[in-house]
Amino acid sequence: MRGDGIDECKKVQGTKNTACNRSTTCEVDKQEEWKKSYDELYKWWSSEGSKLPDNSFKSDKQRQMRELVDKLVAGKSAGAAGVTIANECITARNAVQKWFENTAIPLAEKVKNELVPMRKALVEKFNETKTKREDTKKKSEDNPKDDGLRREWESARDANIEAGRKVDEFDKTYGPDIEYNHDRVVRYWGSEKTNHDEPSKQAENRLAKCERVVKVEWDRLPF
Image (cartoon, rainbow, N blue to C red):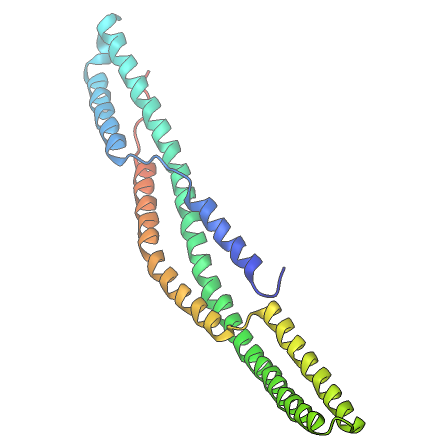
């Protein structure tokens, strides 16, 4: 895993996307309506239906009861799957927020506190060698026959080139806008936290609906 946290960020975000992009079918109204219809037929069967001679009317009522039980069983199964999906989505969303709060922000702070002084020192070294390069160049040009001044200028030039190379290398590795990137991470976390609230409420509502479906109970077929 890379030390910049990008791999871990992708992992928690990917887990959240996988968990929360699955559909559920938790139809509370239908489940309760099926139960109501079944209870009415069950009551009818207990009071008079079971006493009737076998005929098409009685068979049709039995068929209706079987179909209603099949629907209730399927609805309960879908509800149980929905509970699992909703819980996994809630857990994954919370994990993203915890990762930002416990990992991303501290990491951004650490990077900022360590790298900003490092870059500042490199830039100061570059500016120092640049000044010396310019000064020695002028002295060498004013005294073109002085080999010592020329060598001093060449040494200053090489030192300045090397200092510039180190700044470029640092920026290619970490970027020149460390403080801006740190602030951007903090701002992004703040916006993600705000954007997280509504989907989390939706996931919690979905969980509540699915739990209601699962809690619907009915008597076993009496025949």
